[in-house]
Amino acid sequence: MIVALSVGVSAYVAFQVPVWCGAVNRDGQTYCRNNAYGLLMGCSKRQHRWQKIKMIVLRNKVGNVGRSVFPTAKDKFNGVLAVGGLLSAIAAVIVPVVTGG
Image (cartoon, rainbow, N blue to C red; front, side):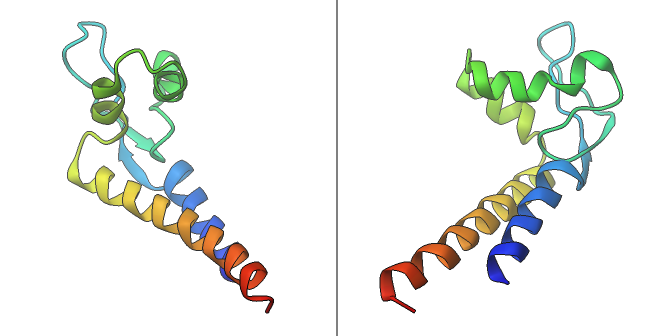
């Protein structure tokens, strides 16, 4: 039960929680402030939809990844929730295996 709830929290934060887009605009200096859903998804603009995921995978500039995925304090908090949910899911699987219960 804990694993399912933890995965559910992580999926909600990654793909459904309302946030700003945060994709890099064409000028390369500013970030998109349109509404988006989920930390990993962009806004309705085609170029922004997968830009944040590409930045995480390609890792050209680590600082830009942090600023585009987590542009505001609200997004940083949601990121902490996602990581906490994943850690909870991992702990719910590993602890019973290690303790034999």
